[in-house]
Image (cartoon, rainbow, N blue to C red; front, side, top):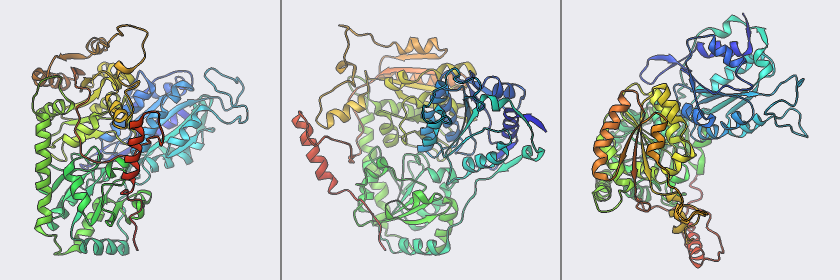
Length: 619
């Protein structure tokens, strides 16, 4: 079959299928986000225009559209993959940040940036960066650091060897991450006699590796020997569809459960064995149990510092057992590693534990500690005088949301409020995407566009601060134009408030974070009119003067979203009121500073590090 490189690539994308968690068959690549320009408009752009089975959605910022593709993949539990293509040079480099988000969060993403000419006849071309010492290097080499798989297609027939590797990485739970195929514009247009078999439909089922029997036996022995075990549910539990297996094991043996950031909303908030979310942005209830546990069974989590409170949340003598499809993650901190699919491993493990059960006093601690945390959050949500707090805004959104709804955030102070304060009413039907692996400002809006595409029912709501809105808001128009409705709740607190908190909390004065502390030559610097700006981008806008009117406005915004319209709710919020889980975070406090309070903060850091667990391994 004689096709150009671009035509062959598109035909292959169309032939790839996947099986969703509910067992239904679906396209692996259900759409392409594109901004066409020099380097992709003629080759790949023409190939995309010649077919009608692969929807193409126009973006307005390359980073934003690629982040939308990431949000799409997260909302489909990694079973479908978003594709993004750009021109060469600046358009391509704009997608590097999105690749970093996908890489940090173990999410599939296919990036197709245009590249310069392989034949070099017209060099240097528009948007080409020339490297004095390496004629083969282009700006697309920047993707190597943030790609699970990178290739530059310099011959059409190269696709025959490359495309199976693309599918492998995007669908393998252990290898999952971004794939970058750099596409030189002359090669995109070159033709080749491709084998027809390359384009036969293929259905990809993520492999479910069973645990090694010897390792499984060691894990079962360790769990059975524990008295105060704690089950930690990470994002891998969601991607495996292992929530039922995890809950069944916990219920049969009385093991308290906690969630990581990526595992949030896997469990109903009122589950009697649910102790809350773990870590810095988690809950005091989960952290209390973690500090007392003699064994931690971590399932499907990479154990990043916000989950482990910089490795201070666990007891020094705790036994760490890690179940993960990726050996890289399973062996961290000397854990007793079980490399396997979460659902398979938990089912096999339950079969070996027989009648073992922990004491009722330990099982009962989950609900008791969570009740204390709930009381604390109830106090934060209670109406009061002054500007609304993040906790109060999240409380209203939480109370108005139901089964099948999907809530999102990414950066600033809102992750701490959503992770720590959100109460899942239906699990795992409802969902949460807190992008706190890369904590990318701007993901909140772009990712919501992708999630709105992916979710067949329910309302997608994203919460963000004024800083994130200003960082990347162009995909509000992309979503409004495309007709993918969601709700964006914009909390305006006059600056980068959570970083101001970190700055002041470690002894430094407020500097360059809040508008009041930033340099301006204006006596009265301007303020952003978020409502007018969002309206100009085609959104329905509801500007709320206080907390009492937020509930009605949010209900109205949900109706707009159901009708396929983007709705933006704008509310002024308090700049320095936070939910606090009481956990420690290691940050780079200077050993010496002109500010005495910074020096004091460094002394406190050094003292806290004495309790930091560096390695949990044992024979």
